[in-house]
Length: 318
Image (tube, rainbow, N blue to C red):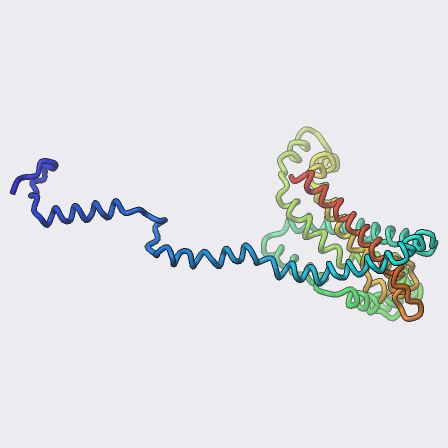
């Protein structure tokens, strides 16, 4: 036996020590595969399901979209273009349909603007609350979103109708129950009913932008002598207006196509496109080509309003 020359600890190169050195060398030379001791076949079996999900996971959604949107849209297009698109020429020359289109736009713009103003102030209030109070506010705002249009309409009738709770409460104070109760069956009443479930949507969209708004430029403007209103208009609104515009576009498009609330409150007394389409499909006067053409026109207008909001957000992502 000979004394090792590579170390200074005085160890001897016995067969046992040489074997352990060779074994450790073999372990160090073994290629490492991400710290996993599983065989390659097991690793490939774990990756296979994820690859299957990437390739075919969208098929259920595509199937639902095809059956729920694609096929009905194709049926509408076929029905609307019967007789070489005569239905489009008919609705373009019908003054009743033109009035319904104007009324629908006015109703949607009014409801969207009212919802934007009130929803923006609610979003500002949310941003100033403590986390616990904010959670309570968010839970309360989710209640109108859970109701359908018919439920909201009946609730307004029970509260503000001719025999509603609010109307009967204000009657001893000099309010006329007949006049006050008839307001909800008019266009302003529809605006109020629409705004009831559109305001939470605006608040939920605008709140993140207000909560993340950098207040240092506003404070700098106030320090330089700007009034609070001038600082808000020149500084805050420049950052918030894309979000506000997108929220307005969303709620306006929703109000433009809303059907259940208007039918329950006004019936067919107010001439708007959704109710006119209902008349076209009723038993008294069934006109499927014109109803299909009106559906395509309404869908195109709503899609255009939504696309406008999306373009504003993409052009000003910050």
